[in-house]
Length: 214
Ligand SMILES: C[S@@+](CC[C@H](N)C(=O)[O-])C[C@H]1O[C@@H](n2cnc3c(N)ncnc32)[C@H](O)[C@@H]1O
Image 1 (tube, rainbow, N blue to C red):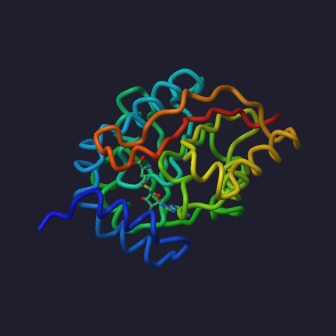
Image 2: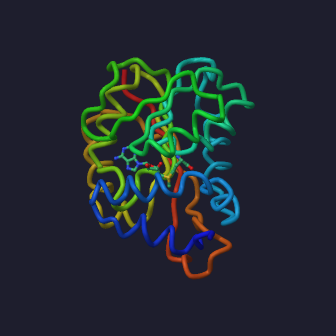
């Protein structure tokens, strides 16, 4: 029996810091996630891809897709010339679906946070879509992503409006600005995350682009 998308969203947004609950919810959703997501009209992948093409100067460099999920972003970036994609995600079920897409040269079962178990300053670009959101990855994930990026590398992420205001991302972004850790390149206009789901009209995102200092 197929589970309605509103129930899937309710499950992942109500995990509220319960790691096992969230990972189980995504493991369970992995097989139908792509079809469900495309069906919501969520424009985040399209906007992220446009900004990646604008701000990543060398798409053939090593690009980390942090919180890659089933690999929908990789599936869009690969035909645009991003030839060296590496993904990481907390859910093994989502990673298995990403592997099936055959666009990632490596996939890692890892958590986003202040420290991420990959070599520091090893990526030419970092992208993250749909993961810097309430109850998913903490604001310190931005420190972790910055430490994996080479000096001068672009870092692009989708930012949930609720997480920005209520989960400490706004303060973290301000702190990184003040510390000169990165340079702001651009923020997209704010967009509705699920335009085909009127009951989710309160969920909005931006796509944010920065360049690591150095
Ligand atoms: C809404 S999905 C987005 C997936 C994909 N990036 C996309 O745009 O379709 C969120 C993903 O983030 C992963 N995730 C949540 N918290 C995480 C964390 N702290 N570290 C790594 N991955 C995490 C989930 O397992 C899930 O695959």
